[in-house]
Each structure stands twice: as C-alpha cells, then as structure tokens.
Image (tube, rainbow, N blue to C red; front, side, top):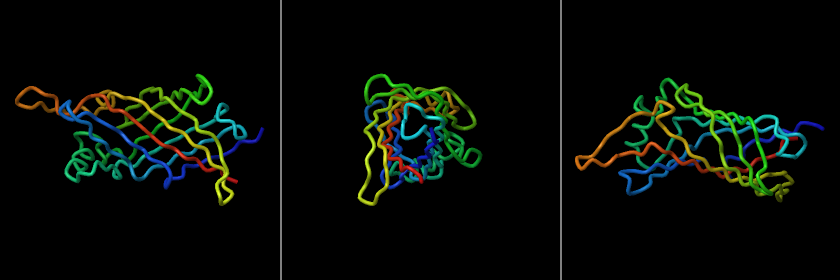
Amino acid sequence: MATTKWVIDPTHSEIQFKVRHLMITTVTGYFSKFNLEVETEGEDFSKTKSIVFTADIDSINTNNEQRDTHLKSADFFDAGTHEQVRFEGRDYEEIEAGFEKLNGELTIRGTSKPITLDVEYHGIVVDPYGQTKAGFSVDGKVNRKEFGLTWDAVTEAGSVVVSDEIRLHCEIQLVKQS
C-alpha cells in the first residue's frame, strides 16, 4: 500500500499546556508556531509509519509578556540554546474504537524522555474545497523537572508557585497531501 503524507492545518489546530499556579489556579499557554508531519499506510492511522512534531519556543504565549519572557529564559525552556520542543511518535495502538495510545519520545532542552499520549480519533472528512482532513484530540502529562525545567519558588506561606506536572492538550487537524 502507498504511503500517505499528512501535514497539520495550523489554522484549525491548537497546541496547549496547562500548569497549576500557587496550587489554586491553572495557567494555560500555547505555542503559535508548530509543525506536524505524519506518514501512514494509505489513510489508515493504525498503520502510522512516522509522526514528527515540533513547536518553536519563541512562539510560547501565556497572555502575559513578562511570564512568556521568563519561560523562554534559561530558568525554563532556554530558547537561546534550544529553539524547539520535539516529539517523535513511535507506536500508535488502538485501545478501543476511536481511542488510541501514542507512545513516543519528547525532547525539551536537549533531554529526551519516553511519554504516552491519549488520542481520540474523530475521523476523516473531505472539506468544501476537496481537501481530505483528519481530526484528533491529544492529551498527556509530563513532569517538567524531568526535562530540565527545574526553576522553583515558594511563597512566604510555603505554597509552591509552579507545579511540576504539566498537562498537554492538542486539537489537531491534518491535511492529506497529494
């Protein structure tokens, strides 16, 4: 069967992360510049050959310029040295109809670790312009300290300022290439 190449539709996709602040609220951030390329056998995502995702650190946005600058600094992502976050999918397995696990390797700040993501497959459609598109929701969790994002602060009352756990949520729309 022929290999099918898919690329992300950035205008219909979102790459978000969420982190607890002071352990009482959640701050949401996202990357505005990212890329995803997928190769499948035909249009069958259960027979995925390759998944490569990158996000530009300089495109991080939490709706607070001061915080974004801090996140780009050496305290966190170190954008001057490490320009991108990278994920390479290794194994895509169906759990039940429409729900999969995606195992792969996430690289942040030059540190690579295996992670597993929960994937909800929404199907394939042809849009009004004749493009074949596939939709997914992707969720996961990582411990930021495992990737070298070790900055910590504690309030006078002893509250942690930033949690170690980062929740990931992505809405992905792929476009089949000719």
